[in-house]
Image (tube, rainbow, N blue to C red; front, side, top):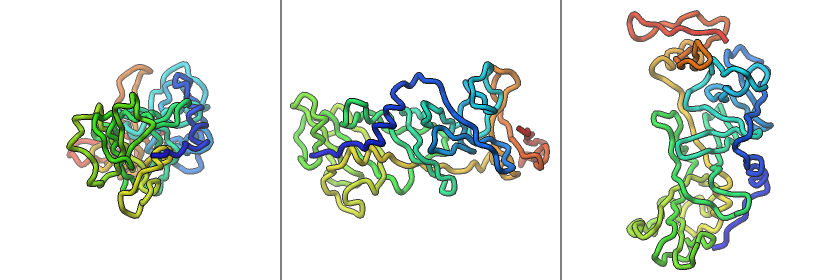
Length: 288
């Protein structure tokens, strides 16, 4: 099965991300609203703002330069922490690191690219991990996503139209790929494969996106387009109370290396405390 080469844009992105030990780089945006939380631009493409945040233990939110002391507060959902690596925002997940290529706040979606799929010297996908989201995370796949299931290094001969030739290995074992819903997917033979991996892609990136299960002859192209995740707003607990009262959720600590506690950050006009649904308690808010 012929595979499409990844785009020049993808290769340029990967070349910027080759050294993961590089220092985080980010620049603060000038706040043009009354939002109590800063927004940042990592590189030139992605606007990062609440509920996302940049881990600033190594950088100062005031000027973007390295800071001699770790941050004592951050504004955003704990599970939506991003890292800025060589001017590319990266979302660390339990399954690995994913480059954030776009965030659409009006739609509550973000576009991601799995950084474990390609290497600089190989245009064949390096398939080896299923997407895993943090427990209790507000993130989820969207209806615009589809799933590719890879049967890797198998000892049976399957359907030639679904063969991924560049993953052949020793010539005696074979690798195949199927899109979700394909009744021909050999799940009954999964035990004869070294691994079975499902990877999300955008439905529009697949041939026959309107339906059908035709040959998947553009696997690399589909994977290089990435996939989407959506996030839901917090509705319960302290964060839900904070947001309903016009605040923004985050965490703070009294000492540079102390323990983190929940915080509700406010604009200047927000009351200094927010009544809780639980009698006798309240959520204290802070002004950044």
